[in-house]
Amino acid sequence: MKCRVCKSLAVISLPRHNSAFCKEHFFEFFYNQVKKAIKEFRMFRPSERILVCVSGGKDSLSLWHALTVLGYPADGLYIDLGIGGYSEKSKEMAEKMANLLGRRLIIVEFGREYAPVNVVAKRARRSECSACGTIKRYYFNRVALEEGYDVVATGHNLDDEAARLLGNILRWHIPFIAKQLPVLEEENELKKKVKPLCRLTEQEIAAYAFLNRISYIRDECPMSQDSTSLLYKRALNLIEAESPGTKHFFYLEFLKQRDIFSVSPTNHDRTGIKRCEICGSASQTDICSFCRLVSYLQPLKT
Ligand SMILES: [Zn+2]
Ligand SMILES: [Zn+2]
Image (cartoon, rainbow, N blue to C red; front, top):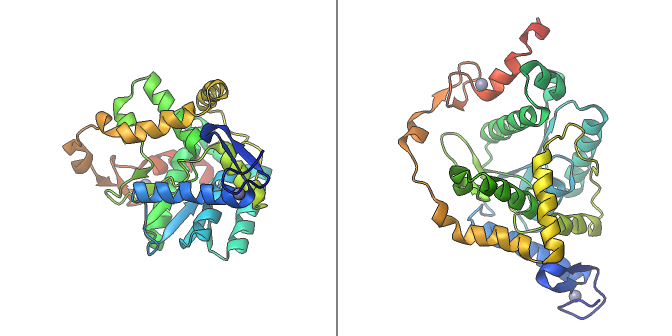
């Protein structure tokens, strides 16, 4: 197998592009995909301050690494949810990357300050994944606001986005489909959110991490029960194996055609914003979803 560009020995084959690359030209391909996503969706400029949400997995660590290589000043945010050894190990990976890049890592000790996420979820009668999502979204935004970051970046990849799109289409959730873009503009104190890896597959990111010797936590989160998204990923991978290129066509063509799904913004979106009575952050209800979630812990704290 030879590199499509220089004909030297290839280290990775990409059936979806009907090509293979040596290490150097794979990196070139990888960075071009990241640059293309940033440019196409006007995610950020080099002068803006970027906060990368780091979980310790390959996607977020590769994102942080790639943005730094490309000259974007990005810092990391790690939220310790108190999931025992898993949290300790993933935090260590995030710290290691911060040292390697010479960038700041902000750590939020949720588990220590409140309770481990599984305890919170149990008290609130919510699934661990949904409690985890609420907590992470809250801190990403709050830390970005408090520390003066312009944009929050997450490591979602093409597989994640294609699986989500498939799920939304299977249920014809038109408003969700219309909003499923790799950039969400800033609104009502909600910071701009971007997904610069949306053009790269899980396999390509794993190769990037491997070739850069990035150490990351390989285990799935032990709390993870989001089996529907795994099912959609499996379904897409089955189709992809038979017909390479289908997955990226499915998602990237959607991005090109996205306007056919656009829904007009309603006044409700803008006028319905209040302040959370407990923490003061912008919220659609009197008490924000984070404060509601941790309120279930109160009998524990006294
Ligand atoms: Zn080459
Ligand atoms: Zn609140």
